[in-house]
Amino acid sequence: MRSLSLIDMLSLASYLGVRPSAAAHVAMMGRSPAERAPIRHGTHTVALGSGAPQGGCALCTKDTAMNETLTGETVALLQQLIRNQCVNDGTVASGQEVRTTDVLRAYLEGSGLDIEAYAPPAAPGRTSLVARIEGRDPTAPTLCLMGHTDVVPVNPQTWTRDPFGGELVHGEVWGRGALDMLNLTASQAVALKALARRPGGWRPRGSLVYLACADEEAGGTLGAGHVCAAHWDALRADYVLTENGGTVSRTAHGDTLHVTVHVGEKGVAWRRLTVRGTPGHGSMPYGADNALVKAAQVVTRLADYRPEPFLHELWATFVDSLSLDPAVKAALVDPARVDDAIAQLPASLATSLWSATHTTFSPNQCRAGVKTNVIPDTV
Image (cartoon, rainbow, N blue to C red; front, side):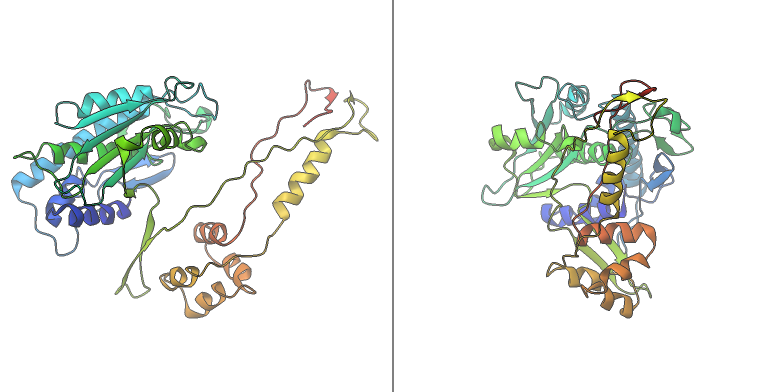
């Protein structure tokens, strides 16, 4: 679980009126060894627990025991979600997220939650789940904890472990979706259930909603899009906490904490390009009208294209929060220098900053040819 999730849960705690240490417990963020066990996806590792917030109360034995129980539930639920193999390849018949919504419903039932599941009539099995704790004040805003249940396809040959095994190895959970984003989908469900089962029939001021949605990896039309369009009364959320909602960083001297909140998302505009040529025998390529060769030139031009930067009015505020040299910051907010400045940054940061300031083009799939010795006429 990323450190941002701790900030999210502490913000949620303030909204719900829960003391910080309890919020840390619910978020599986205590300091016991079990909670510090990381989740690993491929070769990338993220800590399941990030430690208690500064100034938070020390965990007592009872709290630690509760925390370890919740951590164990989160790990077990995450493992099962990985094993469900809800692989979304972009086709309507893929995903079959009903496998995971059935698991989540079984886990949440008996906690006093209102639980419903929805699937588009034309896409059976592409199910999303909504669970609610109604608030005390109908005029207060509703907060939604949203996680998706589908994952992208995987090439098992490039993995050192079964990508759908959900193995727990040396305190690390391995599997497709362990980071994107079944870890949060599982931990949010555990947090919601823990809150719903608090003594005295606990209710927040505003309603708290949990959405486990299908089809996020292919645009969300069959998941969150369907729920919002056809079942908005079951959701009715004013605010959402989900993945990649912001960044947490400190200044170079570590004395100032910066928490940014994402206020927008990049749009998507998929395009399918068809390149045509003339078929022929692969043994005689000289002078051939090879559609694949022409397509390669088009793809190279797309990859080399550098559009003009677009610096939104909020860009300067974001740049100011980065732990960078003032001269670099000045270059990042100058349209004439921003491209060169990004090129000098570490790759992980440069990739993010370029995508936030430019229209991007990414050729991702190519299909050509009918046989190895036939010059393709269509790509």
